[in-house]
Length: 250
Image (cartoon, rainbow, N blue to C red):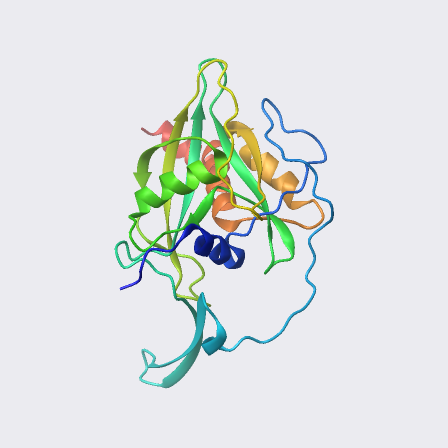
């Protein structure tokens, strides 16, 4: 049984999967911008070396031996997390979020952070690892408060999803959350540990797909797949003739 990870341990774990360093936007996002001060310098990879599984704290590398559908013996290399929650059976959560304002269109909050494995800034929804004593819902509320400063209400939880099935058994759940804003609510402070850096950007839902396409064209920027897939699905539903045709038959 894994013991619950401490806050400092969670911070170290995120450097492999959820590291955060902001990069100021070239142009301010519409409606409402949440940005952090410019870092003193750009992050950079200074050394790359092999890591033995016996020396790793968060991830193990395993060799699987199996037989395929034809009965042929085969092998597969897989990366395995050492921190999976026994309570939930889930490694991580991502928080799809809707901000509801009395006089503005629905918006969503994106986060921009530096990911060392990519050596690039990624545009994502808030996300984080699930602690050993948490459910996915509890982890989502906690991580959302830490990263954005806002309290939220969980509206739905997805089934367990594969994160990158060709390389790892890591899984996750998409937890949709809602934040109801007042007419003049102040921006809350993030609950970030020393060394954590994150930029918050508010984007109208109707503009999300176009904004992500713009981000993907910027140098040293990468849009997270799960976020882009969600936005592309929304865009497809609004623009596809197939969907429009199906709706006309209802």
